[in-house]
Length: 420
Image 1: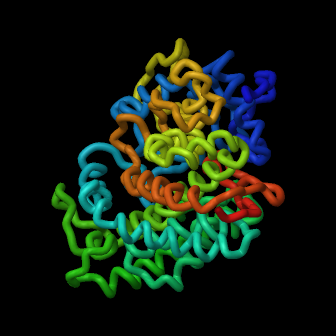
Image 2: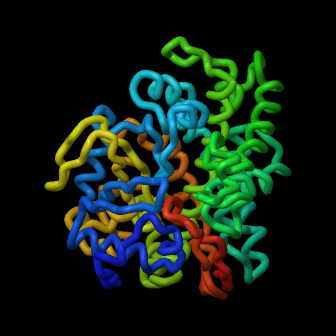
């Protein structure tokens, strides 16, 4: 269903409270598509506001041009000083040679040859996850399937005990959900959050992740392991500059958060879309060969990360607007994935869609998601294994959203299932 646009003066992308009903974000994005695709969005002090990009072509242009639109001033809406950037920067907040060098440490581990070796493991893990969940008949799809599965994949990649997976999920919730009172230890923007301004996401949970990662690093250093932690601590980036302890902390944190959250939310949104569009579920049930192509529609539809920010390095014109050096420029990937100029009938969930140049992982960007192939493989195998088992699946309650304008997350998805 095409959402009704909101009046332009009611659009407020800076307010995470407007992202909790699953409807208002799309109404705001549609307004901006129609009226102001390069929109100046004011923010509460101390932030200064940002340019909101909602058109596919503008987002793709900015994401491909790190010389004009840099990541080095931070990639979230929060405005930070140089000391905070220095202490909090991960590969997300780097451009150029150093960014490529740090990506290169793990790039092969997320490449086709290595991911192909994991196929049997992924299929076996999927079956184990589904066996346990479906046997219940009624369950929370998030807790029992879409959170459980990717975190167990991450545990394998990090070579950590299965018993640690619940703690990894909890850390991800507390860190990414820093604007949601159900998750956050300290809410972003609160007076208390100033105590943690030098920590990523201003979350005290990051200290626990750092401690956990450092213990792993200590055990893996100078070993012969091939897991992700071993590679980070035992290999030198191609620029010849070893990882500092801080580099390791922030890289490990990124793996813990990004390795779980985005795939989890993509799987959840896909399941909800299939429940709400039973004709599309029936198409995949009757013709499973459609699933690999449908994965791209799953990713477009889910858009698990609403936005990433860049900062203009010079005065530049974009969409008829004059952007000044130092302005925040925010790419709303979710909006770009519903752009009528880029997709036919973009508000229709269509598993047979073939023209699907979505922005979910970054389009032609140096910051293209490192784990995009792993995520695609996990999602494909999950639905290849799940759909044939289902005679019917129905919502059994509300599906509350994460209070966040950064992550497009669903907290719970209660379902009743009938097995085939």
